[in-house]
Amino acid sequence: MTKVSPHKNFQTQILQNIKLKAAITMEAARGLLNPKMRPNCFELFGFDFMLDSDLNCWLIEVNTNPCLEESSPLLGSLLPRMIDDLFKLTIDKIYPP
Image (tube, rainbow, N blue to C red; front, side, top):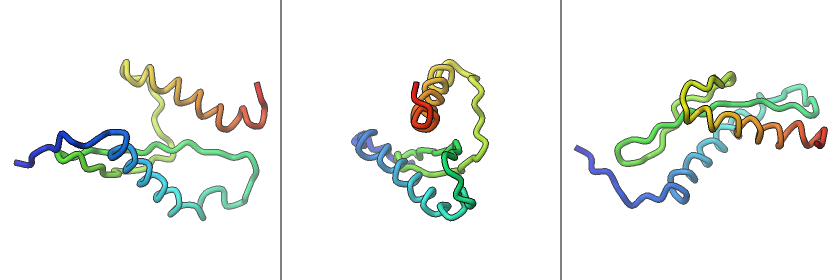
């Protein structure tokens, strides 16, 4: 049986690993994103990660059409905030409030 390390810090180790894997994935697909170079385009991706028993982070898949269903109380609180942040980073830059 694998022993879980209680000494991993979420912010400095796990979250940084998630961000690094997401950045590497987006860099690998950069040439496929917006191939016609249209201005003011954006796309929402859904990254699925898993932590193993040693708290190692694994990228499972990336969805180009992620589900935005508020199927649990946690998603009910996270999704509206995420969508609001998405619009602040995209639409609000073009059409300020």
